[in-house]
Amino acid sequence: MLKKTMFLMAIATPALACGAVYQCRIDGQTVFADEPCGEDATKIRVEAPNSIDLKTPKADKKAPLSGEFKHLLNGIQYIRENARSER
Image 1 (cartoon, rainbow, N blue to C red):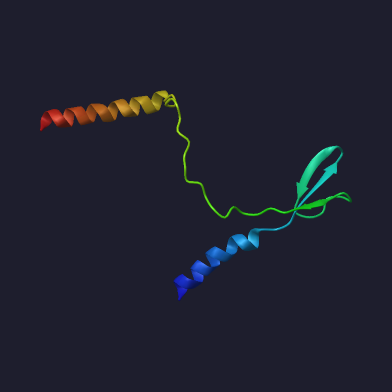
Image 2: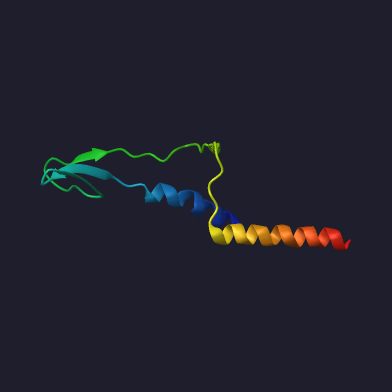
């Protein structure tokens, strides 16, 4: 029963978090707020996406490694090579 209750709470929480968003201009700047921020406030409809795109973009090149990370990888490679030679 507790698992069902927790599951229902997890599903309902995002729906409760969705609120109104208002857009208006104050001193020439566009402002977004959760309540009307001026006489020209326009209510904007914001919807949560109903799907998630799990595709990750492929990088053309590998990102450069920091010096500490290179040192760590070299240490791991050294340990692996010595472990093989001891067998």
